[in-house]
Image 1 (cartoon, rainbow, N blue to C red):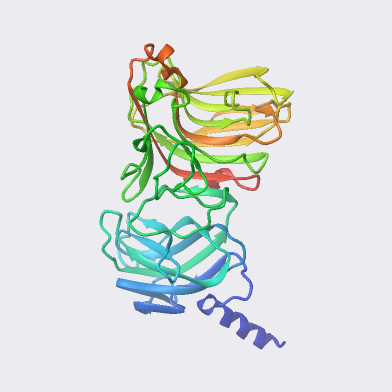
Image 2 (spheres, rainbow, N blue to C red; image 1 turned 90 degrees about the horizontal axis):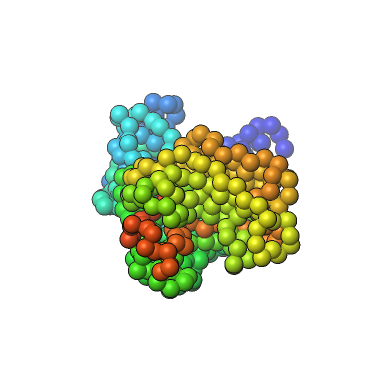
Amino acid sequence: MSKALRVALLFFLSLGGIQSKAQFPIHIEAENVAKSSRTDSIPCVEGNKCLRMDLNGWADYNVTISTAGIYKVSMRVAGTPTNVWVYDTLWNCLGKLHFIDGTASDQSYTTISGSIYLKASVGKIRLQPRGSTFDTRHAALNVNWLEIAQTNLLVSNDFESDWEPYYYTFFPWQSDKADSLSSTWQTGTGFYGWIKQTARPESMVLHNNKSGMDVSALKFELAKSDSSTWPNVRAEIYKTACPSQQMWFGFNFMSPTDVTGDGLAHTLFQMHGQGGGLSPCISIRVENGRYNMKVLWSSVFNPTTHQGEVTYDLGEYETGVWVKWVMYVKFAWDNTGMLQLWKDGIEVATRLNLPNCYNESSWPYPKFGIYKWGWTPQWASYSPYNVLTHYYDSLRIGGSSSSYSEVTH
């Protein structure tokens, strides 16, 4: 093949993203649409052309995805505050990119991105600028380019809830989204790959506008009255055993409940061993007005109790303040273990070449929500509070190939 023919072929493949095999990142100039409505190709201040999507406008692009997974979708955009909804061509929503702040003008560009689960397929994705959950009117937008890149995320979840269906596969360690929350005790129905543990429907709901315009947070609520019988001392979700010895976890957390005078601890995140009667091997907790992390371990195979434990002080607990947590862990019940924890970008606990879990046949599994074992009747009177509330958002979980930057948001 001549050089001129190779150049011509590469140019053809770049137009509209018609690819025989995906080469990541997939970069597509926005004006090279496969199909569109109410759009126009106009000059771009950054060079070449951009695509102007008018009110109710949309644009399709050919994309080849050979492996299902969570991908980083980025766009170079300009215009008024809005969201860019990502659909398949049947108008099933795959996710959204938030353009909350907008730009100074329709030729002042910025890059927005989000983590979106894409199925393996040779097909099209459809883009449409729309308003927020509260204002779904369509908006105009200029788009210079879009790009799809691979990630090492196993879960990426902003806990959004919209009035349209979502389209993805229910694999345990793929994409999870909190849309339908109708489920009973210890069933994952409606939570897509997560198992739900709540005493009543109101124990876990989506709450709008808690982490920013248009973004929902996942709200957990636990009351003393829920805790009259074991195991109703929790409002949590959890997944199966971690698929990798090395894991990254990132999430934003906030509680409006003032529990500074409560000496009965409760957890907001925990890594639980497979033995149901064992305490969590790693847990982030609130106790006496401070955050702490407790680590337990045992080298005995399938232990019935732990051999050692240590507690790390993580600073003051503040009511109504969002905290960004990031954890890296290499599970081990011997001195090859590693554990690092960051709070708002500052490393607050470091445990290197030390044990951090139990000697079991599977790695621990993660749990998010409220676990307050002290609210069972024999201890409940020692706590002056009756209701606990937690909010979570921007959950990111990655395996051994992930990184701090990939799970923080």
